[in-house]
Structure formats: structure tokens, C-alpha cells
Length: 395
Image 1 (tube, rainbow, N blue to C red):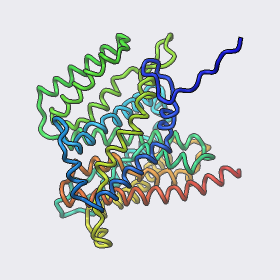
Image 2: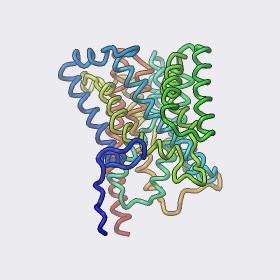
Image 3: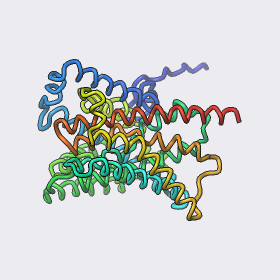
């Protein structure tokens, strides 16, 4: 008997978690990065053609928040939920499981946060702009991995692992910075409500409850409680990711974290991050070369383009020079130069911190610097890594 071939589904089955053409496409690092880049370009064009309609659209009210707030507090919470899942997986079963293996990228990430912040503070010394010190500290995982995927097909797989570990630790540090330094006055009652929702979510995970209808109200309740508590709402996304069970049971083909990541990554890459980019990257490009002399622009751009590679390479070299830690034998220091520069692609999280740090003209200057610095870092890193890719391919 000849069995009829099943035609592949374009959209996933929400009950079975099956793959689909669209879902698999959006899980591709290059496609997700390209969509977010297109959204940022659309925002720039829109804002520079008609800033009034762009601003009006961003401030249209939808329920308790306006569209700009839904993008920054809501859509990015999905992005940070995926980041939380990645963080927990890396800590339990990934590259951060063994401290000895993770030592170099962890120290590199810490130095890659500290040096850009220091450069920003130096550039803005004596001004009232010091609140933006964390803007150049972030690395955008999605964009960095997308660039590496485009130009680095023949590069060692350990190099991607190094970049992923570095970016994950970088995200963890910046998430902590947002929680500590960019939160308003804390409401204890709302914080306790968030804690109650998180505890219930964790208990249900441990009890192996799999019904999504139970988790969705808890996730929404925790998100809103964190928002109302005075802590930035994206922290709820990270916390829920960290509370999700990562290790599968013996009778489970995949863990809850893996199943959730499989389903949510297309939403994050195809909807959430592009939506945030569309609502955040629309800055009016005026001022010409005079803009480059503004302390905020100098601090952010130099922090991303110069501070990131100096911090990452310096931290890696010092650790390998004065301890027994070492980089993988298949990875050369010339490879690390390209990756260190690539880490200067801040984009998503840097735009978020710009929104949290400033308002008005200063916020526009910070966002312009983020876009400029990220673009320079991506282009320079792409050229270096493409050359390294050719050398690896021919060896």
C-alpha cells in the first residue's frame, strides 16, 4: 500500500508544536535580523518624511498603554523571555555549565560592558548626560549572530559558541543594570503580586502541568504586576524564562523550555523585535557633522565601536595571560578581533536603554548614535570576519 505524502504545514499546529515553513524561516538568524533591520529602516524613513504622523501613531492609546509603550514594555518582554530561556539553558546544559569553559567569554563580556560605559562617562564628564552610561553596554544577540551567520560559514563553530556565551552574559549584566538603575520607585504590593504569579508559575512547572491556558494568565499577571511595581516590565519576561524547566524528564523528547523556545522565537524574531524597532528607531537625522560632536553621540558611538572590542579583547587577553584559562585551540586571536568588533552591534537593547535614559532631543541623539555605532560595528566586523572566513575555507 502506498501512503500519501503529507504536505508540510505553512503554519504550526499549536497543540503539537510542529514546525512550519514560516516558523522555520523566522528561526533563521539571518532572516530575523533582516526583518528587524527592515523595520528600523522603515522607521527612519517614516520619521524623516513625516515626523508628526510617526509621533502621533506611537502615542495612540490601546488600553492602559500607548503603542510605543506596548512596543517597549510588551513586545520586548517576549524577546527577553527568549533571552531568559537561553540564559537558563546555558547555565544548566550549555557553555556556562562549566566555569572553566565559560571563564574567558564571561570575563570578556564583563569587560565589554565596563569599558564602553567608561568611555561614555569620559565623553560626557561635566554634563548632565551621565544617566546614559549603560546605552553602549549591550550587545544585540540576534543581530550579532545574524551577521556571523551571513559571513562566517567556514569559521570554527567554537567562535559562534564564544559569541553566543559572551552575548548571553552581556544580556544578563544589562538586564541587571535595567532592574537596578532604570527602575522608578518600587511598589511593594505590586512586587509581591508579581512574586506570587512567578511562584505559581514555578510550582506548575515542577508539577509538570503542560496546559497553556493555565500559564498565560499567570504570565500576563506577572508582567502587569512588574510593570506597575516600578521595575521595567521586560524583567518579567526574563524571570519567567528563568523559571521555566530546562531539563527534560526521561519520558520527554523535549523540555518545556525547548518547546516554548521553538514556538516563541518566530514570534520574537518576526513580530516583537521588528515592532519595537519600528516604534523606537524613528529618529530625525539632522545636524550633519555637528551631531557627531555632541557628547552623547560621541560617548555612545565610541563606546560601541571602540569600547566593546577593547573591553572584550583586553579582558580575554588579561585572563589568558595571568591565569590558566585559554581560548579554544581552533580559534585564533584574529578571529576574536572580528567577534569583539561585532559585539558592538547594540541595536535592540541599546535603543531600549536610550528610551529609559533620556527624553526629547537627548534621546534622539542617543538613538542616532546607537544606529550609527551599530552599523559601523556590523560593517567593519563583517569585512574582517569575511576575510577570516576565506582563510579558514582555504585551509
